[in-house]
Image (cartoon, one colour):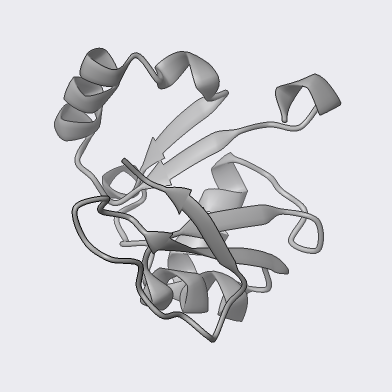
Length: 112
């Protein structure tokens, strides 16, 4: 995605300390232009107002942004804010079978 000039931003409900530990263990931080923890914005991703706060610090175009998440309630909030391209992760835990999600396009990419 970066090769096409797009920003790649990780937006998470995880606390900053937890995400720092995860990034240290997985060495994934270098794949993101920015990591935003919901705690920084004072609201979880499940709330529509979260997206307005995110937009204020990390501007994005709602009609061309792709947002991928494993939580249908988070995807609904993003949709209600006006993010056009949404994708549900069907198998966020590889030790579990894929979930059935019909409300949003699906990704077969595993989160683990």
